[in-house]
Image (cartoon, rainbow, N blue to C red; front, side, top):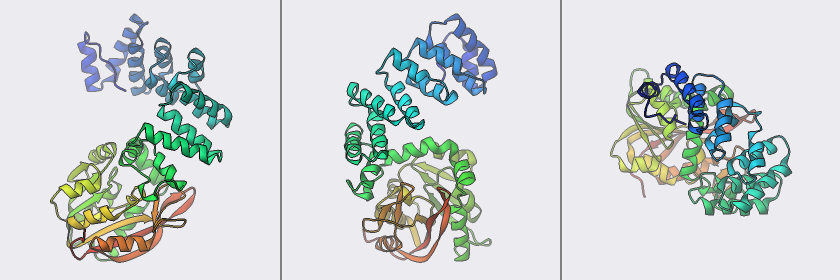
Length: 399
């Protein structure tokens, strides 16, 4: 949320543009006090207080009292003061307050008051049938309660409301066998997930999940003679580069390193690390298909988890690899039910069989040269079954 600058205050404008919160804070406090009936000044004050690490709940509550319809203030208040019962209070004033109803339902569900959570969302859906949040969350709650058929109907309704599937309803429909597993994730959903995840991505993966995928792939490259200290890779591309964890591992071995990721927030954080020579936001298949760069190495660490049918990705990589070039990648190993070698694992994302990976890559002109089993991170306090693979470009793709 950005502060709404008062056009009459050049000092305030300059302070906000420079991010000089110590200068901006007292000016915003005076504006809020002088215009106590205007919610925007209390919202602006809360922005500055949060930036300074000061408590902002009082200012946010005042803004909500003056304008209960502002969903952003409600969400921010829930973030800075989880114990605040402002959602329930707003529902007393307006039983059909959409953002408050969703927040109250989430809190009720989290505190094991599941019937209350369901009732709250049902009431909101009756008033707002097109509410995506209420429709999808109600489906999730009923799904967890074992009411599969009701949940499926709500997931279908979610897709009708939002065909781009920003909530991930297709994944849940695929999990129930209603839609093809290979179509479980939309690009819009994946971009949203990782844009929201970007801020905590590095710490969560490395500190909590013990993520070692990039380093394990790097060691595989060294052991196979693909990477060496005396000979750098002329041009490499990191597909699904994220915040740059793979880039950091491979950068010492590359003269030129490009990165591609579907989530702009992930790319922004990768830019801050100054690891890559070039970064591009977009779907990897589309980006690779429209460029004419030729690479000697492609890296795809933990990318296949959000792509069911890997054929288009393998083809686009093959078309951009020089003859003899290498693809190093990881894949979640298939350990349960599948559709022709593609499944959804216990972590809720795609897993693939070794046979599917070998055959699909071969069809695209990539020959499997090494396959190793292991784990690249934890999942639910257990090692995640992972395949580490190396492919070599031998010929042009058939497709």
